[in-house]
Image (cartoon, rainbow, N blue to C red; front, side, top):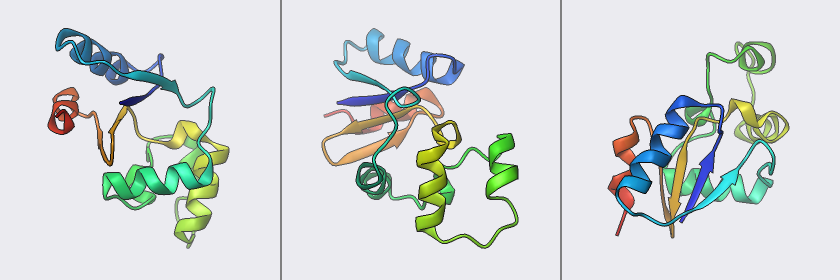
Length: 113
């Protein structure tokens, strides 16, 4: 399993605690340090069953500057997400071909085998 994590995010840290308390093994991917490749992000969106806009943090100033009010294609939004990974909702747990956003943290348990 891969856990897409931002150590500065309280919700992301809460998700780690939940996984650890349930003795679930995972690999941490700090996606701000190791940004997504386009193909990875597209695949993750399909596992999440979300559009790029669904996975955007709309409270971020970058969203307001680069996306809000503009008529961007999914491909253009993905490009901005790759350039500005801070825009991506977190945390995300990927387990084989299933993924979930850990908000609330208990969502993470939905895809554990």
